[in-house]
Length: 207
Ligand SMILES: Nc1nc2c(c(=O)[nH]1)N[C@H]1C(S)=C(S)[C@@H](COP(=O)(O)O)O[C@H]1N2
Ligand SMILES: [Mo]
Image (cartoon, rainbow, N blue to C red; front, side):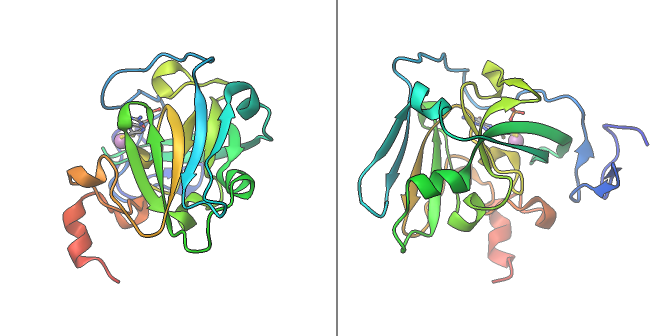
């Protein structure tokens, strides 16, 4: 098969890609705005919002990099109709983070916040799904600056815009609120297997 041109149920390594996606091998960076610089002395990562304690959790860079890490190999699906098979990630699993910073029982959604106010919302259930990582490494090396160094979210089961680069905080929410692209016409949920690309599709979504 000719890579980069196939669409539909393109097979790779025996796996189907979601509908309307073409396989691409290279990871050409894609984002809105400029690449922030990393100042380790100023950087922190926070969990705030409806935590069980109502307090904010905070890690500086040394503390964050001391957290236990896991590795995951996942396909990455961008809404702009390309998918990258078998991306290797390493970092802190989202479920480990939620264990360290417990949400209140009423928490239903999270907002992931990047530098400069980029944000993406998702159900708590999607955040806790298998393979969701706060990644510090990709393909055996620290993240490249344009791919989110020093920390990015990876939510492999949703379109790529939910995988917030230059991640700085996670907000627990009781109820939902739309993030950066979700406010600008992108689908609220973003399941690539359902081709949930545009917000107008939400009107006809099954309940
Ligand atoms: N902070 C931030 N994160 C972002 C974006 C962005 O514009 N800003 N773009 C998203 C989109 S649309 C995609 S497809 C992926 C691309 O990740 P990559 O550049 O590492 O391939 O990052 C996502 N994360
Ligand atoms: Mo994207």
